Amino acid sequence: MNFILSYVEKMPLIPDQYNVLVAQLISAIVFLIILYLLARGSSWFFNRYLGRLVAKINSDRWFAAMSEHHFFTAVGVVVAALAAINLHPVFITKDVAWVTTIMGKITGLFVVLSFSWLINSLLNTVGRIYGRNPNIPIKGLVQALKIILFLITSLFVLSLLLGRRPMYIITGLSALAAVFSLIFKDPILGFAASIQLTTNKLIKIGDWITVDSAGADGNIIDISLTSVRVQNFDMTIVSVPTYDMISKPFKNWNGMYAAKARRIQRSILIDVDTVKFLDRPMLDRLKKIALLKDYLEQKEQEIKEFNAERNVKENFLNGRHLTNIGTFRHYAELYLASRPYVVSDDSNFTLMVRQLPQNAQGLPLEIYCFLNTTVWTDYEALQSDIFDHLFSVLPEFGLYAYQQPSGRNIAKGIELVVRPEGKASA
Image (cartoon, rainbow, N blue to C red; front, side, top):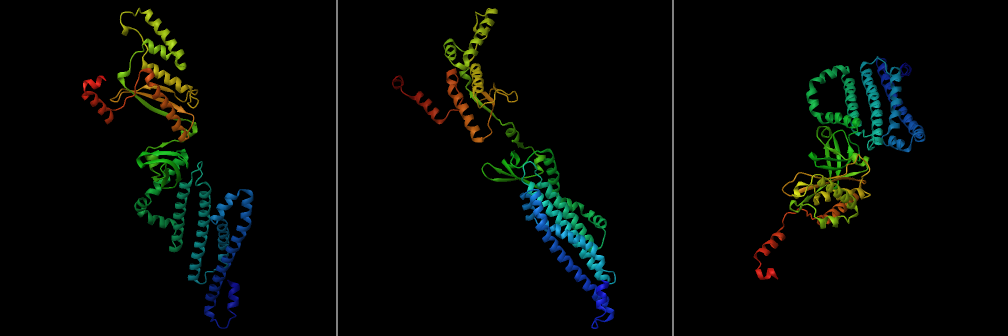
């Protein structure tokens, strides 16, 4: 400033009372030009050399993300802002109050916005690298930090423009806390939910989830501060509020993929009228089935000894006897255990065939087991193979699956009733 003032004083065209003002204005212009050139030069330097260093030390992915979000340019601008803090007292004095005030605000805004830009570029870079990483779903956290950064930056900008301390502005804004809480309700709830979801690893991108309340049943494609986007299997996309993921129940199928097994839990409805004891012809026929031979021989011997000890002769119901449904149930378990695609050698995966309470449609016989595949098409094909076989062998045990009468069944029944006796005998 003094150096410029000495030159201005030598200019005859400028009145003496304006020497300080003109010198201050010229000094301010020179100050701004130096900052501009310094920002341009340092940005060029960091883009050229720091970028190469990052590409060599880390990876091209980080270099691409930093370049995309102008991180190296922001570093150069921050260097210029740090220089502005040191050069401001050199170029700007207190001789002209209004120039000093304006240039102080400009310098302060430049410093605040420069650091805010650098932090925002860093957050964008981290979000670009890890935002879609299924193991580190931090997109919501990055968005929350950017909101906080925006609020802090706005606070300092207002403080500089109004010439008040930040605490004074915070005190004034506290009266609007209720309004802000209403405006930012979803981001606040989403931020809290994002932290819980990320910390507890409840969900991640790529997980198959089912949210009945939102009609979501598919894979997660995005996790943000306020919503979780799910692509259903019919290719529609559902947006679920992030807070709903901790306030409402949902099902995450990731455990199924981790276990590399998927459960079958389906029932065959047995017509109760077909349940009966095994007679000798049926027992001899079923012994020819390889899976049942050892079981039937063992059970037959066990039942003979039991009945002999109790001298069971007079009444058939006084002793123990094999039933067709019990034998079929055991056959189904042996059949499932013999299939290579059914998990039968691990106690953590239950394999059983059980009866459920009888209902109006018959006696449910539930098949409960796990297949060693999680591929949807393979799972459905193998499950169909199992039930194809079980339905096909039911008549061998004298059992029939329950089926509600259709119009065709009713028509046949009426035809038998009204058919003339001669034709019926024919």
